[in-house]
Image (cartoon, rainbow, N blue to C red):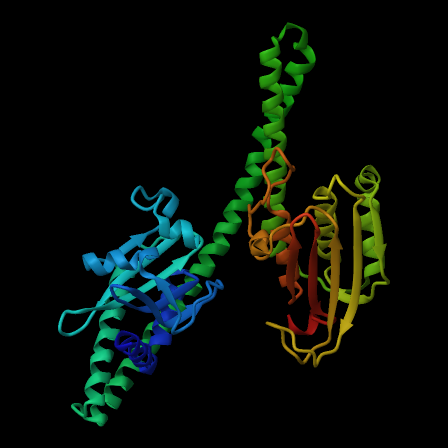
Length: 437
């Protein structure tokens, strides 16, 4: 009971430190990590004191974890930081039970020691993707923030004991806030440099992708020539190998084309026009006519509206999502794809969207093989596939392109799925966006 009371006091004390949320924000902005926390770590408990959670890790202040399931338990015992750039490539942690249990690929945690050198807990961050963390700049920053948190904890205890003058504390906080603002300004400038670098990298990738086309075409041409002219003199094993080369080249061609499409989605001129979506949908269904007939698919489509959009991008959006529904249809039943739409009143509360606009919402659902809802956000990431090449063809870029198109229209997309029952995609974007570009 006493230990629980002390834990609650520690959580409350960290909550009193006004700069901790700023520290966690800087940690996430600097490292790219999606979850950061200050934790109280004892022999029996890991307790979150303050949290920034952009990846739905699911912990909030006061929540606890079993100490045996955390790496922080090892940090408490050793008193040393643990930094992992990429779990899958780290010989010490790739088989460790903690990343396997919680599903992260990058991790950093430094100890927080009190003035009397006793161990308080950790400042830590995790993310499901790998990040470059083991650099002097990031490591020094974590240790600096850990020292600041420790200092504030000491100050809070002294304040509670009436041992520190309140005016001195206010002056100190003001100086510290100035330093945080300065650091935030520096980070903003670095982020601008990073955005410019990423833009140049996209241009480089675009050029490189084009340069890859020519040698790939030669591979395909020579393989076809050999198979057509020399097939009678080739052994069965040689024919098998040439077939594998041809299939690999075809997949490489598809990947390059998809990468080019993905890189162009943000780069092309965004020319918005008022377009009847019925017309666009009719054109897409005509392009997919062979696949629809091959699957004997049934399409149930409600009347669509006219909206201000980028026509060829919206055509690509419909093509990718409906194509996905056809590809991942179930062999146990006739594929049914339903497409409906509605105008949403501007006063309706929409998460992550302003409430002073009128929105157009499109819902595309199917009765295919579906997916687990835990992958609802992951399927929009580049190269994320839930099935291997032997089950279904594809590059894992199609839905990433869809998400970019929706973002170009200042909207959001949500995916809902149930295994062996089907999938649903909900697209919401303003009916008028041109004036806001």
